[in-house]
Image 1 (spheres, rainbow, N blue to C red):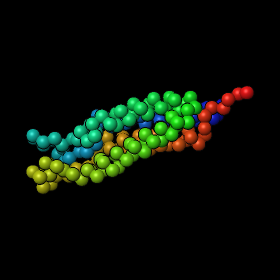
Image 2 (cartoon, rainbow, N blue to C red):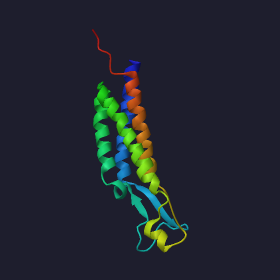
Image 3 (cartoon, rainbow, N blue to C red):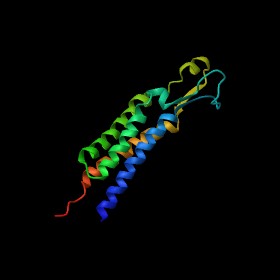
Image 4 (spheres, rainbow, N blue to C red):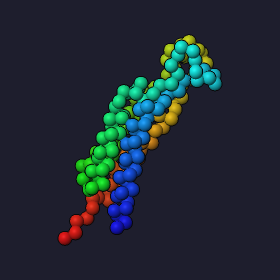
Length: 149
């Protein structure tokens, strides 16, 4: 009985990671500020996940929701897919978005005091990836439901 509860909790963790990936697509990943101001006339200072990588993480998040349900039922390939979704999300957040965190773009060329920092979306995609890795890995470790003979 306890193993079933742990399996359900891990699958729910994976589903939460999938939802967070979808949300990160629409959230601000990089916020550009000039001194303390985030709104600059004629400039885009909020860069969303969809601006950086289109619908990729939303699609990955939707896929994670599907495989989380399959992993709950005991499909080992779904458990592995859940963990791999997390690895992909961390790679996108760390390598693709993380490398652009200091890039102020056109705002920085116009204003010397411009800075670019991580915003909510960056933390959402990173946390989602970690949750998916933990959920998929945990489900693989405890295995599928035991069959009664």
